[in-house]
Length: 454
Image 1 (cartoon, rainbow, N blue to C red):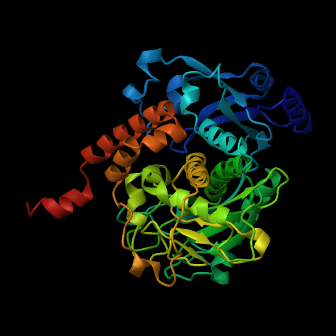
Image 2 (image 1 turned 60 degrees about the vertical axis):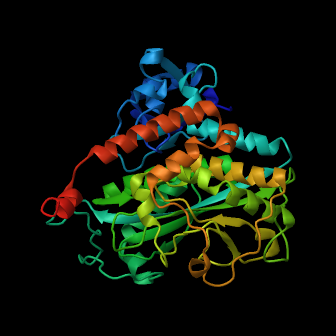
Image 3 (image 1 turned 135 degrees about the horizontal axis):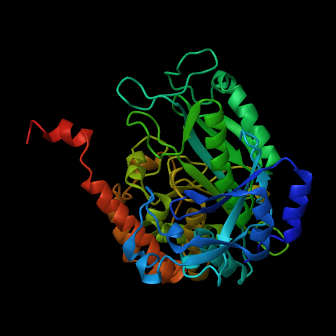
């Protein structure tokens, strides 16, 4: 575990003499940033000796509730655990009224106990280190879709697409539409500027498959660095949208009649010299690539809760929706779960299309790479790639409910070995608590279906 040097903070404060406040955050298992707002004069101490955070901070539900059987609450007296800054994460937040910077922290492996066992970034590092020990260096990139919504709900209290620059509300699907991007140019300009300021390599913007839905790709690189960027990028999108009077959401399925939002993860394996071990003139890649596909397919069901962590995540799985439905793979085929895109031989890689945009990038990447490692170790054969319509040819479907995925992860001996019993103990306790809370809530759909008919 590498933490930032004290000189990084000293240089930043010297370069930004107007900064008054520091937003210190850590990412929990649900991908929710949690932390504290510090004063400028407190920053150097964080770099010198860390910052104490309660053990419960990494064992909370999505709604911020303690989970007593996570082992991070009363069992340890909600003990303070020390977190330290990550190198390169101290950045200015240009949209804040008070001059403010942010710094991302992670639990120290020893001083951060017992919470460090639940730190999702630690899990990704563990999986990456396992691959590197065998000469495999994972390279990843992230494509994140999101909706831009009006900050105000409609007359029925439901979310609605944000107003465009002309004061109208987008109503139709204009996938790849350029006018749709032009209409949100002020937002995109500020977002790209903020990404540049924070060193986040945001690239192509696309108008996606629903009104107000956008996708921006991030550049590929070292797997851990790429996921750090994805985490910070999601915070940027939400903050810049808020500045423009909008709400950005990465919810997997915010509208029943419109496209869901996904997080496509691109992965390849390099050697120590940086050469792509999947590179091949064959569009289907090298035998190593096919083994990686085999491993991801073999562990897909047991990993699904990490790719689709919430009840809403499973509403995204619908036929002919560009969301995958089956454990399938193919070459340049968007109807499968694992796609090998076309392009030059040296760019050969796998596009993992299963994750919802609501997934925690660290956990999703850890599960993907653990699957890759399984395939390489066991030299798994994925079978023939799907040709044509993968939806029509599917013989085995992914589960479309939260509980099935939760049970599959709970019962997986492979996951306990690859991801760690201690981490899974906390994560599954949190997800079990969320499941109980979600199922106990009575709402509009219950009344509409059952109030008069039952």
